[in-house]
Amino acid sequence: MGCEKNRTVPPWLQGTLVRVGPGLFSVGETSYDHWFDGMSLLHSFTIKDGNVFYRSRFLRGDTYKANMEAKRIVISEMGTMAYPDSSKSIFSKFITFLNHTVPDFTDNCGNNIIRYGNNFYATSETNYIRKIDPITLETHDKVDYMKYLPVNIVTSHPHYDKEGNAYNMGTSIADKAKTKYILFKVPAEKEGMCMRLKIICTLPCRSVFSPSYYHSFGMTENFFIFIEQPLKLDILKMATAYMRGVNWASCIKYLPDDNTLIQLIDRRTKKVVHKFYTDAMVVHHLVNAYEEDGHAVLDVIAYCDNSLYDMFYLSKMKEGPESQGSKDTDFTSKYKRLVLPLSDKGAGTGENIVKLKHTTATAVKEKDGKILCHPEILCEGMITTKVGLIIGKFDAETKKMIEWSEESCLPSEPVFIPKPNAVEEDDGVVLTSVINLNPGKSFLLVLDAKSFKEVARSYVNTDLHMDMHGYFIPECS
Image (cartoon, rainbow, N blue to C red; front, side):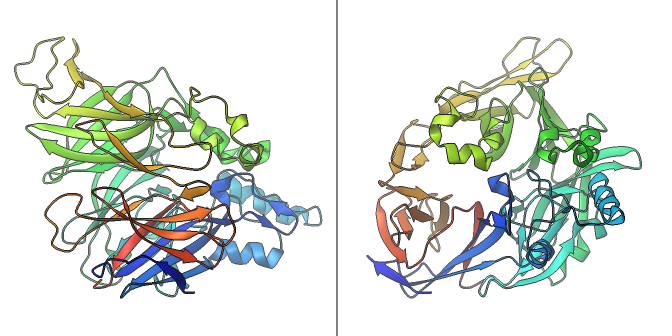
């Protein structure tokens, strides 16, 4: 589908932005309970010679096909349990019960688009990913991580190095009486990458039946950074959730009295070389991670508990902002900076060993030798207004924010596209798809990454859906 062009798209901007998110929330007389659970909808914006072309298509995986064939929701999601109708036999109901005790998870991969080698996949956080054609948005093979690694849960936010190798993390639950976190590599050079997964290292879980939930991890020039937070999956409760008539998400527990463990894995030796502790927090997304003058700097968006997930139950979303409480409730985010010294040699008990001058973050050596970190709060608050959503660019040094917003507009996650041969870190553009609450007015927005001023917009002659994450594929890829 073509888009109505408005203003000039930079001539160097050539490629396809592929995005994914929930797009269908009812099948027959059944409905999903949580927004994250909706049937996965792919959509793309292809930019070529100043023109923009839009396409969308549902991800046609096994989950989609089973639901459509049954004309009802028959595959459970994290926030929605699917129960057989009353006409099913006792045997069928028993099989359904067994499938939920040791669940074969959904392949409704509606969280992100990832690249392994030359292939692109839709992914969520289960052991399944779905290969897609990023141009036609057709659904292809289902890949089961479990055939190559003993991982039940895998993040949807891998990292990539300069050679195109991908790195990701997954959780192996109660395998041979052990629960562990597995960091693995997907080589870039050939087809069939998932058959050549390489384990980099494994990390023990602090509790066999309560592994930490994590949505992302960090990578710097020399380290991988893993945050084991006190947001736990209660495996025993998850195994009995179906029988008890509750969803799997209700079995995630937050332990505010526990601490958060941050581990640094040396990319060369593949071993944990540093451990740090900080107060309890819930982190879904990392903002940035880098090294500076003998320190690793880790920026995160942190929450006080798991209220953010609860906020997206459809019943609460339909009630509107008033049902979510005031701006001081627990789903308010904080942009935290943690500074992790790479050496504590000669440091005394109680001494702050952070030596960077431009931060108030501290790391103190305690009597037992542990290093306790206190973050710098760079900013806080949700980016919302009474008329729509705001996207912003925050300067971590000056603490200033520049923003873009427009009445009745809901922008999606912004994606930075660097200009070819760029030297400065923000030389390029930011892309975001924008839902306009006025019908027929939604558009792809192009912002100058330095000034956050509008460069161009292309209107889409159809309604857009709010999505999760995506991937920009340059034309030369």
